Image 1: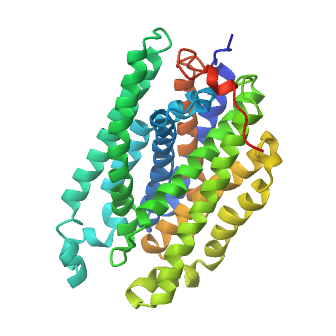
Image 2: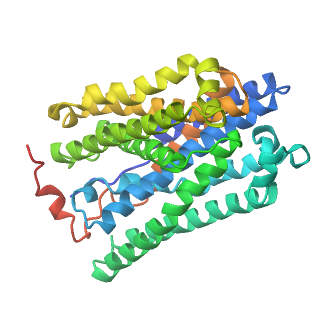
Image 3: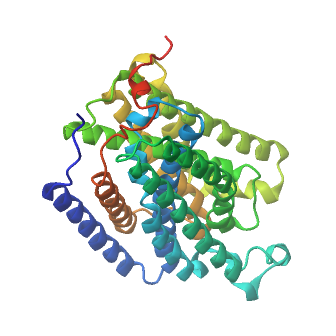
Amino acid sequence: MYKSFEFSKKIKSFLIAMIVIGAVLAVAGVAMNLDHTHRIWANVLLNGFYFTAIAMSAAFFVIVHVLGESGWHTAVQRIPEAMSMYVPVGGVFMLLVLVGMHDIYHWSHTEHLDEILQGKAPYLNPMFFSIRTVAYIIIWSMLVIWFRKTSLKTDSNDDIKLFNKQRSIAGIFIVIFAVTSSTSAWDWIMSIDAHWFSTLFGWYIFVSTFVSAVSVIIILLFVLRRMGYMEHINDEHLHDLGKYLFGFSIFWAYLWVSQYLLIWYSNIPEETIYYVKRIQDFEGVFYANVIINFLAPFLILMARGTKRQLNWLIAAAVIVFIGHWIDMYLAIMPGSIGHPDFGILEIGMTVFVAGIFLFVFFTNFAKAPVVPENHPFFKESFDYDNIR
């Protein structure tokens, strides 16, 4: 009944070409910046983290619906499932960051620590940081692979025990992810500006990557529809995806304003330095970040009708995906390289990693039916209406 996806030679050739072009540009960018290795490693962190976090957030998208016993999501479930399989691959880039940590993290130079960083040294030190990084990648990879394997077993076995096992895995996943999503954001991103901290930073990064994952789900759905797949997706499914994209864009803006206003109002130099650096040296990027990630999706998706039309959704999704790459750029670059730089290195690295991400996605999407037909709530996903 449902057309299985074929990872054709044409698609493979396109993605391989994308990876090769990205690699060539990235290598050229690296060669041009051998005297500025901090910029090279900052780009490895930027794209390594962004796409790995998107993959983990895609897994979270499925997990939270499984725990909530949702029905509608089963129509699109195999897209975020396949996205999540990038986590072990993305973990390689995050392990590479360990090689270049001295070019990104000031606290890693243990012989030149001031009093504040000495106080944080029991947590922020190269050994413990490396252990945590390896632990994140191993644990996350095990969880997404475990869930994926269990999900695929349901394609040939409709035993309710498999569904119950998925819920058990989801329960374990969400507890671990609730902790590690924040601690990994502290480690990999917030510790770049090691003298500064924010108690809601973990939530801020999670929401940024989650709404990015929703945008990628929509983009991939659009691409698959153009290829002749996922024809079962109707306006109700699009509406729910649109509500996620709209709602979490608003939530991201809420957290952005909450963090900014509290720091602005208290006016403590140790806290304001984070924004002073970004407003003074990255002014254009700073304001563009807010406009792109809040105002654009807010205006596009405010009306009910636009959430139910794939052409409007894809426009908003592309804007949000690019916008939150900029958000990660703004979180990483001021503390690591100190000034805005955008050129062949940034473009090449992004195209290279995005190409690998897409290759992993399509490879895994082709390994299973496009829908989990034996899911007990699958039929329910076609028998509901969004409230008008």
